[in-house]
Amino acid sequence: NNYQRLAAAMLNQLEQELPVSRVNVILEGVANQWAADAHIPNGTLQERLETVVIYLSQNGYHASWEDAPQGYFLYLENCPYHHLTQDRDSLCRMDMHLIANLLGVVPRLAERMAQGDSRCAYFIPQQS
Image 1: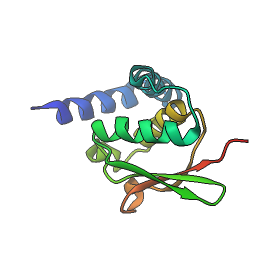
Image 2: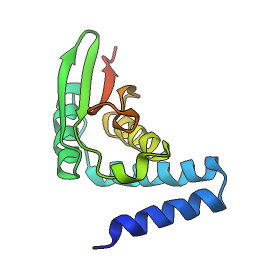
Image 3: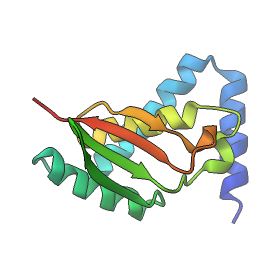
């Protein structure tokens, strides 16, 4: 298929034609749509993490999570669009927005494949 080439060309055109803030709004809209389509049920943060890991893994991220002091770590062992992230961080911001919407908690990025780490890792703070 030619999806990767098409996606790269479309993202390049968006970035050439629109200000960064507009590109971010579009990508946040994509993340919002994906989060809505995921139908993550309400529950404890651990229950949501379990469901989010399944959803992300079904979509190519190879996700897992573990307990951490004062929260959790969500790990993504694969980036489904790593070929698009080398020179840009807009898709990484989109993933951050997606994860925040799926979990209902804003994560903190701890590791990032696009910066040479072996995986992406997000710290998820324990909710009060």
